[in-house]
Image 1 (cartoon, rainbow, N blue to C red):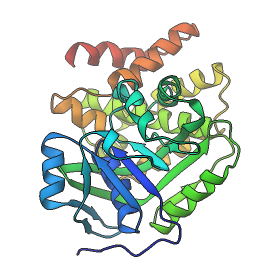
Image 2: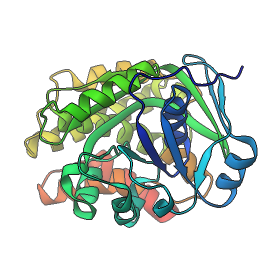
Image 3: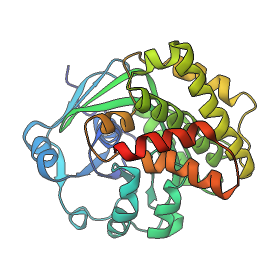
Length: 314
């Protein structure tokens, strides 16, 4: 089923830099709602978008096709925008950050949705920090082929916030735009706690899942791997606390409950990349835990063992 623009009372001018699963999904759903979305892509992805459009499959927000698609290979061709969604991997952000500058004006926002607790730091270093928001994507989606994204599971949720946690005019504008598009939006009191909460989940699931080579359904039901998940999460909770990040008292059991609700066949992107021989977020996730733990003089045996097992294999 193909849907076209439903219109938006306040259309935004948006650039999506890198059209993989996350960039494709959120860029596509904004385009469907009538926003002016410009996709920056190269190679097979650019060719697929021009020829066939952007195809999104979702059991909750509906299947649709964005066609024609506004595709550019050079961000300088896009002009100024109100929102940039970097759709590249976390370890690529420091490289692409300077390229985003040419699309930014006063008030423009850059919304990184990559996994990791140092993501915003990389962008703040590369850009004027005023432009950078904190963001967390609660969604399971993956790229089937270039220009084709599939979303499984519950209604997507975005957690967004200014890095100083104030409620700004642009934050309210983005909240309205995504809500109109059918995306649940949360604006927490502290965006950094939200980022660490996602980091605790995705690092544990990615690390244990990749080491075991099994999908989430088996990971959460087998006693041994569920205990590994719980122990990994507990270590990251301890690490966060040592750094002054106060996570929810029930962060480990509530995160396990969240994992229990994910599609049984799901695998995090790090695990899929690792299996397919592509560069993964291993360094962004597990390596960060190890490095921060060593700096804090903490004993984190599960996450250290996962690092020692996986790094030689990547």
